[in-house]
Image 1 (tube, helix red, strand yellow):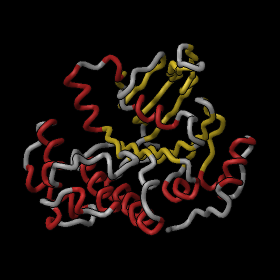
Image 2 (cartoon, rainbow, N blue to C red):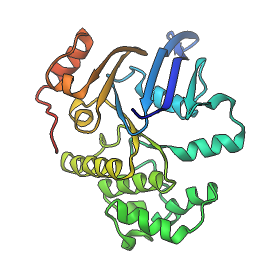
Image 3 (cartoon, one colour):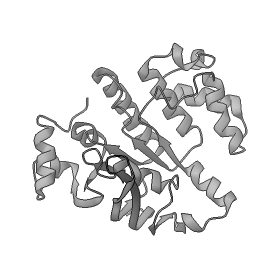
Length: 265
């Protein structure tokens, strides 16, 4: 069995939410309430739930983009909160994220070439030209797109560039935060199939945040169902496709996504 690459233990994250007629009141909302995950190298985990369930907060806290109230995240056995800056930078090279919005995640005034070269410069990785060409080829774009701007690309092409930007650093783990929700259905299928091909070829570990059961059962082996900051159930995609779930909330999610199937899109 593969070793655990990412472990999160008892994560808690609380936000202060303004309340009252003029916003003078404050309410404490637990976005994460004692959440734990255990991810083996090369495995795939989906985090599903309705809006506000804590999915995206979990992804940001795993990447140390937001501080935790309590709990710990271990990557390759190292506690991320205790890493020195150089070690933390190396961790972030190995733990990359593809964001939801391909329109907002790429700098509008930067060419594709600059978008892909910046992470290489930040992490001091050489052989820039060869890496850029290889990354573009890997996502099915080709070097003809190198000097185009984001506004000259379709939504699917922009998301392919976002995937290339993450993969160019040769990470071990890819965090996918609703990577296809802003795309048309036909383009969603193309991007999902691309991600599956890349995962198999590179032996990547995936965490996919989504509210779409059809998407996650296509790509992920296990699913963690979240509600109001808590984990309510852990199931396999095969169990979900066969309706072998126990929690009423998971059953409601299935009903809301009636007609999904685990098959190649």
